[in-house]
View: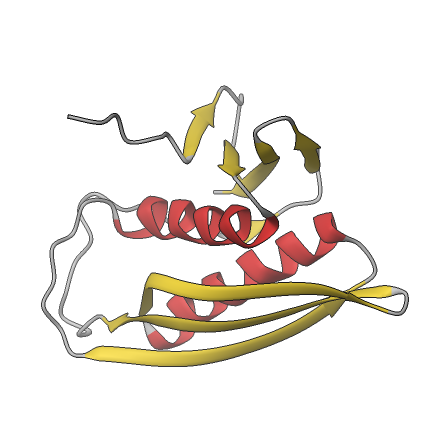
Length: 147
């Protein structure tokens, strides 16, 4: 059986949640970061709720800031609409002097009665120790979530 590559992992942090995320390209890195955030929010919940779709367009002067904006958008939809990200098609391109992200998100909306025993409350995404770089295997990023 082939081994499934690890897309993200938890790192030690004294107060908050710190993750390291991997992707063979920028689009996979951003998707994996979004899915890691979703896992932290909802844990191992199994659901058959109807599918929901969202479209996101973001721009930023740097890829690291774009990553924070992307994660904040996912957290916003979860907090406000209880939208749980299942997958996304992400494109990132450089336009003049900024980075443009376009994404089609798919997922489901949690019924208000659902509790998330395995999930955790995440208050925000920080810029502290933010890191995004290219390596021989693709891209790697480190992000800290305020809990």
